[in-house]
Image 1 (cartoon, rainbow, N blue to C red):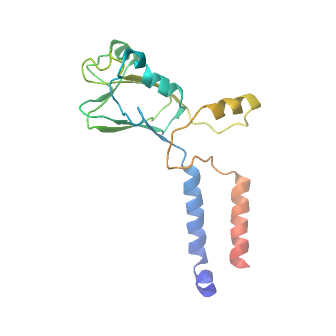
Image 2 (image 1 turned 45 degrees about the vertical axis):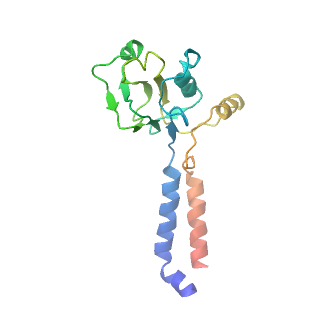
Image 3 (image 1 turned 120 degrees about the vertical axis):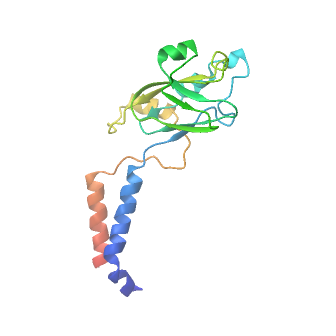
Length: 181
């Protein structure tokens, strides 16, 4: 066993480094619009703003995705004016396949509506504000509380910030110490 380990240590070391580097870069989430109900017309007038209430409780970043699950409907990304009118003849994005994933490729405001006549006016519309991805700054006590109150999406991917130079140096030195000991 020790002979195999010494013979393959460069391969093993490269594998470990690549795995650590890959995990450190994963920093995006997928949000499911409408939860278990999916992208549907709100059931009552009281729920007309249900999608915007949901969006305001989440924090969206560049490279995050939103998943729309629906039947016999569609999803359109439109301008603010078209969002207000609930009508678009030239949407920026259109899908009607029943399971649509939309990736945020830039920061800014995105406007979504249903393409089925009457659905948008009954509340099947959504505004999402996407933040720019920035290096995390040292949080002040108040901003740390604000961040704790803003839930992120449930995803199977751990959200991690990239490791610092000191962390990488310690990791590499430790590995070399184990390999050559």
